[in-house]
Length: 104
Image 1 (cartoon, rainbow, N blue to C red):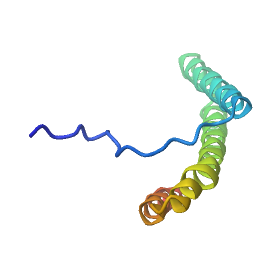
Image 2: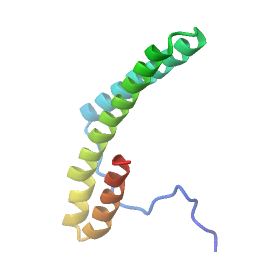
Image 3: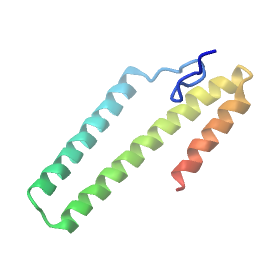
Image 4: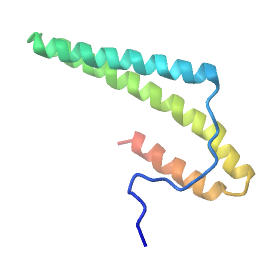
């Protein structure tokens, strides 16, 4: 029997993001990508380390904000749907595991 690839997730209903929400997430990611490219240029230009570290902190903060938005969607959408359909225990355990990762 072939094993499932490690990154594969069990099938579950997907609660889609609204069009506006998807666009907003895309814009956030594009900004973050631009910030990361800016950091690369700063390193190539041998800029002052504190300035680079400040930008790294800004990227980390932006990624944290994106993660909170995605978690919010997951809790209000996917987890709520799973609970309503009788599969809440697994969805809650999965959400708690992700939330614990934020605390690291």
